[in-house]
Image (cartoon, rainbow, N blue to C red; front, side, top):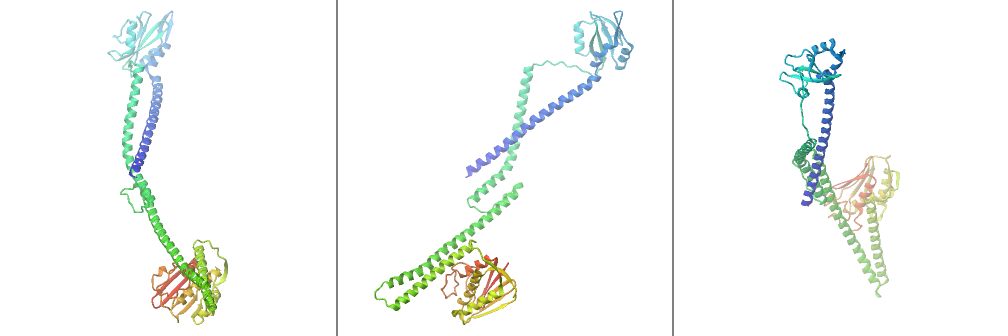
Amino acid sequence: MGTKLTKTRWRLTGSYLISIVIIVLIILFVNTFILVFYLMNQHLSNTAEEEQNSAEVFARGFSHYLALDDGEPILSQEGQDALQNYGAWFQLLDENGVVVDSYLAPSTASSNYTPMDLVHKYKYMDDEFNTYFVGAYESFSYIVGVPYSDDRRYVFTLNPETVLSFLSEALLAIILIDTIIACSIGLLFSAKLTKPIQAIIERISQLKNRNFKQQHLKKPGIYHSVFSNLNDVSDTLKKHEAEQHKLEKLRNEWISNVSHDLKTPLASIYGYAELLKGDDVSQQERMDYAEVIERQSSYIQNLIDDFNLTMRLRSQQMPLQLRDTRIEPFVREIVIDVLNQPTFKDASITFTSEAPQLTRQVDQHLLKRGLLNFIYNALIHNKEGVSVHVNVTSTFILIKDNGEGIQGDLHHIFDRYYRGSNTTNINGTGLGMAIARDIMEAHGATVELTSQKGKGTSIRILFG
């Protein structure tokens, strides 16, 4: 498991580093493109602006100030004014480089120029900081000198292959350095970011392995809510597992009790059936044995019916036949039915009502059975002379007795097959209280039971 988590962590770290490097390279190329575009655009803009006022443009266009008079070039007055305004001087050369005319030329200016002199002066400034510009007019050449000009000339000797090689090496070095920086920074950040993610993956793996122990990261940062939710999930799963174990235990006990309850009547049936096979059995004994078999068979049938009913109620697979019913006459009639039974003809049962017009939608058959179970439980599991009082109000039905009270855990009363320690009557299937509670819950009601030793028990059925 540790190796798997380590691989996952490095996989996350690697993915993060690759993302960082890709982002850095994209940014590098985009920034380079923007920088080159900006420099080119700026250069073109500056060049256009500078060319409008540069000495180079002034000198090259100076020929329109010249004219020929009988084959001799003449500098116009406009040209002289332009030279004065620009602070420049002028020399006109013939085909042999001899100065034939000049204007504002310094005394140090040469009177004869070889082609090499012209090339040299055009390329470089002289000691007096004159910048030379050379132009042509007809068969003549001219020089325009500008002292202390802002224009500068620089001579570069470039080898394209060398330049390309240098740029490639520079670009490779930049990429390499940026990648190292990106990896270093990405490693630091990924260690901080992937550690909580690794903890989250590990926590989920622990939950998968049913380890519900609470865990808290020292510095969860932005993952605080995630860890909080995982701990909530852990608590929920822990509770569900505990509930599942509890239900599994109850199910096993339930099956065990059902098996036990079925074995006793089946043993009686089997035993009396064996006795009936005998030849020396009198007619009266046959009748007695048949009666026992019939009674035990009826018990088994009731047990199976109760078992099916409680299972259907619990799984909500039993549709209720709901009808509008006035609760007061309905409950009063149930009390009368109990008193009319020979077994309970001497029982002390009283009935009162505070809500004569209370009407509810109920399944009359099931509700009657549930209420009868509660009343029977109060009569059967107490000593003779117990008094039972049934009261109907607008919000609940109360069944109260003044018997011995329940001796044992109250929260087990509604468990299937549970019988209190003060129960002496073992008749019944042991499902009566559980079925009664399930019937009430199927009607949307809740059952509250209170009991005090020596003072009796109260069952309050509250309708929602």
